[in-house]
Image (cartoon, rainbow, N blue to C red; front, side, top):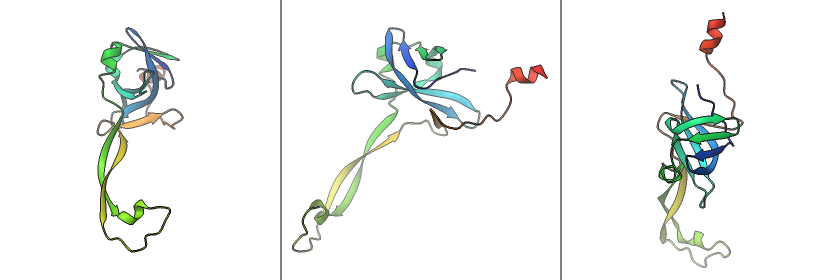
Length: 143
């Protein structure tokens, strides 16, 4: 079992890279699969780090096996895509009413951001309520 704290400093083999922000897990087998780390370098992007890359954890520190360059090549947590939006052109004039009703349609592309979470997995953030389903193997051995 691995303890992955959120808001902990995250280090790569060659220095500090950021802070842990979220934990991603599989709700079916109750396993933690990924860690989300917010970079301390501009543009301060968040990256999805597989748990296999975690070397060591402490209450306020997570050490990764990878280098900073390898870390920055990992998948981003927040992905931006553009969707096509159609609306009447009179909406473009918010402070004055059109003198005549314009029926032309404006086509625009609107940015939409979403989290890059592997299919079938859930994100757990600091302060989220998590309920244990079973007992640990060590608890079962004591009885």
